Image (cartoon, one colour):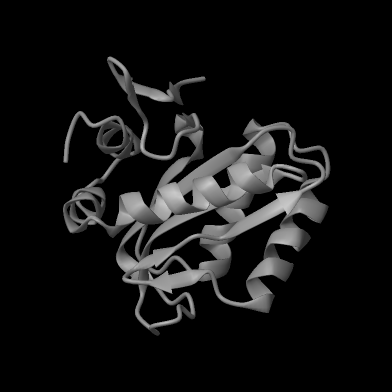
Length: 164
């Protein structure tokens, strides 16, 4: 299983500070719904990160989404949850060139979804990871580069700093 390592290049951290399985990176086709995108990312995190109760994990994430949309604006959504069954921090990333009707705070389509799953008890790390993701995706050149990607390999290249 290929991982986008914490080490992007000599001494440099990957943008989120955690490893991302390449199997957790997706480029969605046209007409992908919010539910389809979230289910794909949830399934990938659950399957590749050894989350025992996938259905309970999915319910926890959808419950968090029901409290308030994680579509933060600017074409970005960061669904996130702390869950007892998550053994270690996990991230999945989805790109939609066409955009997804996500119910974002700015009512604009979402093009980049970063799903974060954290173990309970890692509050500081959880907040740090959320902040890192938001800061990384604030850069217009990063968002533009990600939206040009057609494959997960290209997305991984952006995350590792090989392209941008």
